[in-house]
Image 1 (tube, one colour):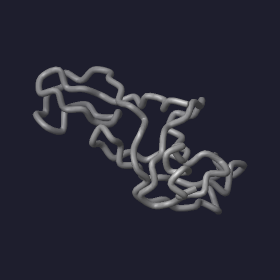
Image 2 (spheres, helix red, strand yellow; image 1 turned 45 degrees about the vertical axis):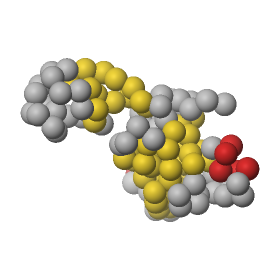
Image 3 (cartoon, one colour; image 1 turned 180 degrees about the horizontal axis):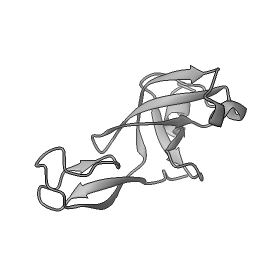
Image 4 (cartoon, helix red, strand yellow; image 1 turned 45 degrees about the horizontal axis):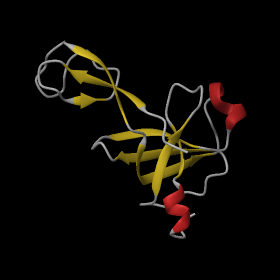
Length: 116
């Protein structure tokens, strides 16, 4: 299974790619930001398990919040898919989902190396 692309922003002036939610480029302060996507593959940097979730997410607890260093050179926050056993440094990939944030699972290559 291939990784789901992750939506980002690209600056039309300097080409910098950054996470959505910005009004101006973090590199050159240009307001000319447009949609872009990067491959949803990377390495799990760290994670935390949320057991006492905010009211809006209470029915989903417990769940894991992940920090992933994407192969594209960006660091993003998302969730780990239910049933994923997290291993720091393991390869992960974004999977399809309806959530407004990326959902990651261990990549097959990590499982083959004994990480998951």
